[in-house]
Image (cartoon, rainbow, N blue to C red; front, side, top):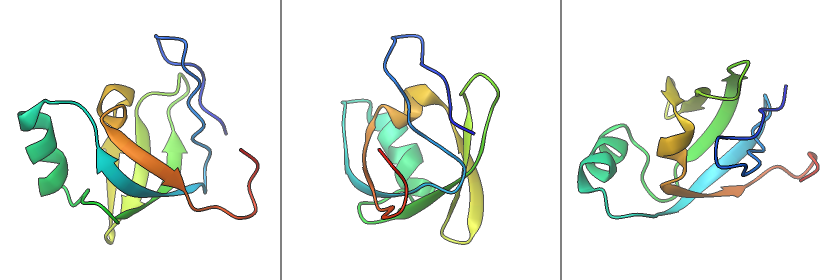
Length: 89
């Protein structure tokens, strides 16, 4: 299942089973940054997409042995790199 476009029209390419690694953080919202770090989303953390809501938001991930749901607005603050070798971009 592939998510739809977000409200800004940017295509989100999160499909069930896709895997990503957190490379860095974007933006200047220190409260959100602190929350994401507390949740274990540090640079180098791996995320696997488990489920995508019907309208593409939120997205459920597996990371660090637990499940985590993030909104598209929260994901915009993360620079993610795909680590799938068998899935098309």
